[in-house]
Amino acid sequence: DTAVSQTPKYLVTQMGNDKSIKCEQNLGHDTMYWYKQDSKKFLKIMFSYNNKELIINETVPNRFSPKSPDKAHLNLHINSLELGDSAVYFCASSQERSGYGYTFGSGTRLTVV
Amino acid sequence: AQSVTQLGSHVSVSEGALVLLRCNYSSSVPPYLFWYVQYPNQGLQLLLKYTTGATLVKGINGFEAEFKKSETSFHLTKPSAHMSDAAEYFCAVSDRVSNTGKLIFGQGTTLQVKP
Image (cartoon, rainbow over the protein chains, first blue to last red):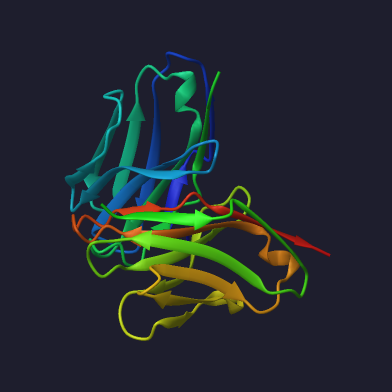
């Protein structure tokens, strides 16, 4: 039973399309995150929600919009996809805001062509 | 602002040799420090963490790390490398200043293990 699951695992789409990535955690954690891993494997936080409240919104284009319908789910919607959006997107969750005890999902590899 | 620097983007060792991956951090508050491992096409897995207490922390797969405040370092070691240790390793510090749970990652170190 996967603790943090993301779908889809792979996503290939054309420029200009709109796509969503879904994330669900069954750990009972209060906080969920989206991280982006670029082609050089550098990881950077994008968003974080705590009990459905947005608490981190890093410098990310407005085309990216997170949505958290409940504390077990955090989805990422991307409008008007660009070539530069190609990356691996990781969802993660943690029990507290200390950064203690993160659990990561297996990632979604997004390729924009 | 907190930051993490991993010295050496690529480390190559022979099977059975000592593994040493270097991590230095910058933090204005006592840090929480982490090492994560990423195998190809997988997510990140926590190897070990330091929050408070004993400065030598042991993790999974025989890895350990020592928190040295005076050197602002948290280097990862393993006495004897296995082929299965080949992966990407990330050092991270928790942003305890903002109290948002944000992790700040280093650039990563690719560990190659030669037979």
